[in-house]
Image (cartoon, rainbow, N blue to C red):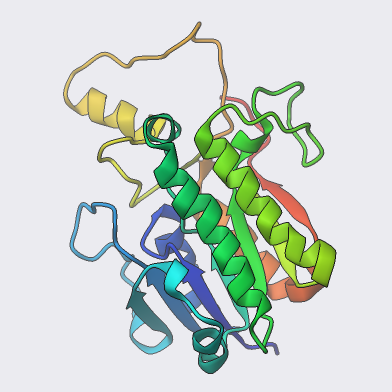
Length: 255
């Protein structure tokens, strides 16, 4: 049986808490190290889902993922890194593009260079977004859909993909890219620039009208986060044999 030590950047985010919960429950995963700077707000002091395995298999480090060094990663004995850390608001990215460039794009570039300098060469699984495709030319969008990003957020995610993919294309470093479609679930950010489902719930609780922009005919592929993280686990268990792959994660159903 394989055994894995998985590091998760953005461990306190929506995907992070659910992935950590799934990983510590998996027999093949012996240790999970979470990395997060806790820059966002939470409804509770502890964002992680209750799981007794957290006490024995989980280590949480409060730091910016950009401060990771090759020596830290090698010393920890990490087998795989799931890179979830990112700012994720389209609207905010248009108001503060520098923030998105520095964290999403430049940060991913720095992480790629850090991993290249490691001795252990852990698998890198990069979380991206279907926003890299822009407006759909056809549906359902597949991994070969042309890319026309329409926001600074989308550009930052596409650039992050490309920086990490260079590791594979040039050095054959093990990299897998995952494009997560519109995700919802427990621990989703409800402060500031929130996603559509928590925004709708918040409006409904206040008795306010739900605002839909444009012509109201647009559709999305909504995906429950508990289902989405199972795809990440499947990739981790397959490991480096998937190097160079790109996967869309969604239901394939328009809502």
